[in-house]
Image 1 (cartoon, rainbow, N blue to C red):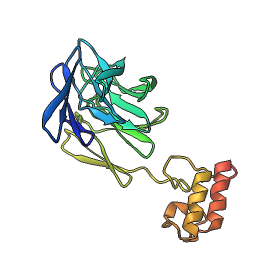
Image 2 (cartoon, rainbow, N blue to C red):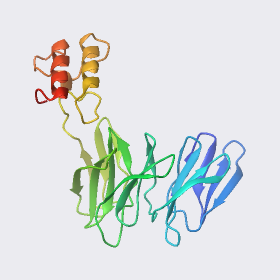
Image 3 (cartoon, rainbow, N blue to C red):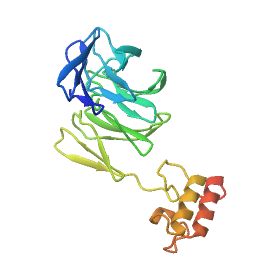
Image 4 (cartoon, rainbow, N blue to C red):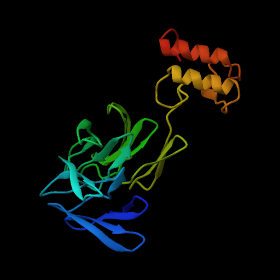
Length: 250
């Protein structure tokens, strides 16, 4: 596992504890003892550090950095999958082949999805991008998964044919991930016409962006050219409004 930082402090697991070190002075500030080995790289956001423990305890912790007190904890069999934080939510996989989404403030589970079953689990650390969460699981070799980040709806999966513990990376709308198959994979979803803010829906917000493109306030993109005349105009914004209302198809 690796260390995480909030800019002034380093956080890292060591045995049955989460440790905090001041970067400037290189001195240990505190140690938070838990009931089992810390299995994950921690994640830090808004003054709270999040991490999971393995067998003999099986918990996901949220610990206040300033007071060194437990904010909340929830049952979770920690693997090497480290928590990802996005939009007030915590995403993490476990050794029981489940990927979870928790409310970062309360620890309430928002959704979970089982990816498979067997001797291994979700070791890949999830990545959130474009309204989706991506991870991989070592079931029937290494399968890559994409879920809707809000409600966990499965979007797609792909079996690489070999073990996969790699963390995905997303750049410019393309997902990259390696596998023990010896290959680096790149996945890209086809764009949805009219979905200009890449939230997988065509709404009035996309029409507003189209109008900004029509007047030159933001650069125009192909997905905004709804009528196929190689220009982005107010006509395209009107068509996007019609798609949002269900009057026409994208």
